[in-house]
Length: 251
Image: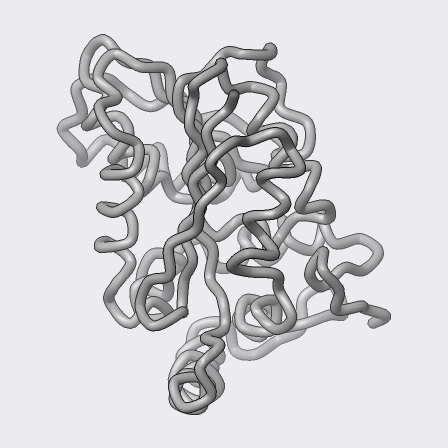
């Protein structure tokens, strides 16, 4: 496979179809592996995202790359009966699991799940009050375009809150992080997926760990939010740098 690590992350021909196939493969155990990859911190990250969203009661919300719907469910709980929440993802299998999980949640109002592309959202300009995304940007073929789309569909004053995995900058922390990712996560990933290549490329969880390598984070990513037009683009380092959470406000 021909690939390139650059400020746009790892890119290669056919990435979109490959990513769909990866997430189709892992949909049934995606939540469990997310918990393992985050070392049990993922719920805290999502709680922090909701804190940065502020009071979203009765607001229009969109979760891009919603996966199995965890962030979308939090939006729905906070938006209440007067709110509207959409969850968009390119992988139908992930959305099937989101729909199934929703039947077990006591939400004030159902999330509207639908298939859609983060690089070409179907919604009109200035439509949403809040746009969220979790761990999606590593999987798109154009990070800037995905952020531009978030900006486009937000109303003036609206907020984008995005969580993305990253590799810690501190060398000591990075040493232990690498041990965990390359051994514990890699082993568990192979246990679930069998380590079989997908579309002649990475096995599923080799991709999810490899995609963090060389991926832009911190100020470099915040600069992409500024380029899209966001004001007050900020980033918050969590779990010693294992994740960065970005906040942008549309002017």
